Length: 558
Image (cartoon, rainbow, N blue to C red; front, top):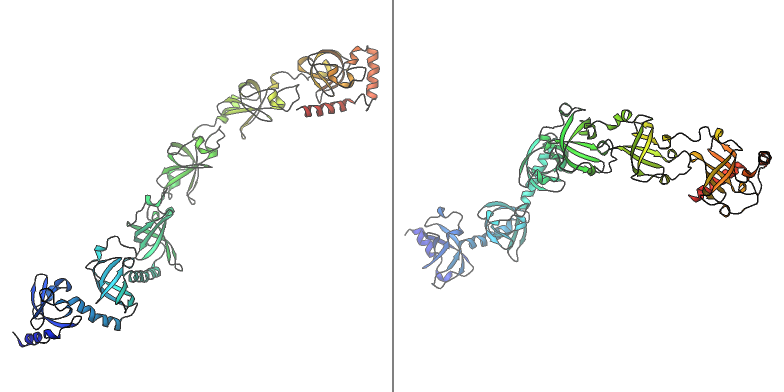
C-alpha cells in the first residue's frame, strides 16, 4: 500500500469519529451500486452509487467527504453519506454567498409531497406551482433533469430552501416578448402554439408573446365556436393584424393567411345571377344563406314572398334547407350579398292588369274582415279590398260586418289597381245600377208612395221604397197630433203611405210625410208653403236639422 494511502487510512482513528461530523474517506472498492470507503482505523462504510452524479468517474484511492450518521450499525460498520457531507458543506457556502433571488443550477432528485426535491448543492423544495408556467400533470418527467432555479426563500433555522423554475421561465418569456414586440409588425406571418380557447377566440403563444385570435378572424366562413377550428396545443400559422406596444398585445388572424373568397365575388356571383345555397342562420329580419365556404348572403324578410305578408323567416324557410335565390346587390367592401327568394319566380302582380282589369266582374272568398272593409281572396296570394262605402248604394253604415262575414263567397267589380303598392280596390254595390241615378224623376216632391218601415229611431222612422232606397219620416210628420214616441204609432214591418216632401240627391236622402198622405193636392200645396216658412219650432224641425238628428241617432245606435 502506498504511503499516501497509509496516511489517509491513519488520518482518522476510530476513536476520533463522531456522529454528525464530516470526515475524509478513501474509496477502497467499487462494487455494483455500492462504493466502499475507509473512514479511518479498521472501519469501512458503504456509500450508495446513487449519491454520485457519475459513478464511472470514481476510482479506487479517490478521497471523498462523508457524513457520519451513526458510528455503528448492527454489523458494527459506520453509517455514512457522501450526499449529506456535501449538503452540510454547501449549506454554509450557499448561506454565505447566495440570497433570495439568486439563480443556481440544480438536479431534480425525486418527488415529494406538493412538488419536487432538487439538489442545488443542498436539497431544496420546488413547489408544483413553481415548476412551469402551467402546473404539470406528470412530475416524473422532470426527475433526473438539470435546470436553472431561482431562490425564493432561505430559512436558516429550519435549514430549507424554496426555489422556482417558473419565475425564470416567465422572465425569459418577458425578455423574448419585449424583443419580439420591438420587431414584430402588422402583416408578419408567425408560427405559434394554441394555449387555450374561449367563447370569443383563442390565445396563441408566439415565442412567449400571447396573441388573441378572435373568432371572427378564424375563417372566412361561419364559426359557431373557436374549438371547431383550433385546439389547445395545436401549432398554427397566423398573420399579425394588430400590435399594441403599450399593452404588449398583438391581434392575430388565421383566415388572413388563406385566400379571401370575397376578392372576386362579383365575377363569380354577379348581380342578377341565381345561386344555390343552404340556410345556415335566421334572424328576425331575414335568413342567411351559405353560398360557398366563407360566403353568405342575406335574404331579407321582404324578399321571401311576392304575396304573403311574412312575419318571421321560419314561416318560409328553415335551417338546413337548400334554396335558390337571385343576387340583388353586392358590397365587396362590406362583404355583404343581398338575395331574393321571391325573384326566382315571376311576380304574380305583374299579371294583375291582364287577369283583373278595371271593370272586370270577379268572384272570391272573404279572407279577412277589418273595421273599414273586407279582403277578398281572388287567387293564392292576390287579395282585393272592398271598402265599407262600396258595399251598398243605399244603406248608410260604418260596420262592414252588417254586409259580409269571413268565409262568404262574393261577387265584385274591380274598381282600381295600384300595382306598385300591390292593391286592388273592389266594389260590391257596383254590380247593380245606382238606384239614386235619376231619383228626382222617380220621386218628385208630392209623389204619393207606399213603403215598409225598416227602422225606428227616436226622431222618426225609415221607410223602404223601391230598389232598396230608404226615406225618412220625421216624428213631426207622422201624425197631425203631437206624439212623444215613434214606436207608439209605428212598428217595423208596417206598411205605410206617405208623400215625398224633400229629395236631397247630393246627400242621398228622401224626406217623407205620413200625415201629408191624407191631403189633397191643394191642401198639400198649402202645407208645403208653411213647411218652407218654418225654421225651428217645438213640433217641426227644418229638414236639414231633421237629418242632423238622424245622423246623431244612428251614431248613438251603432
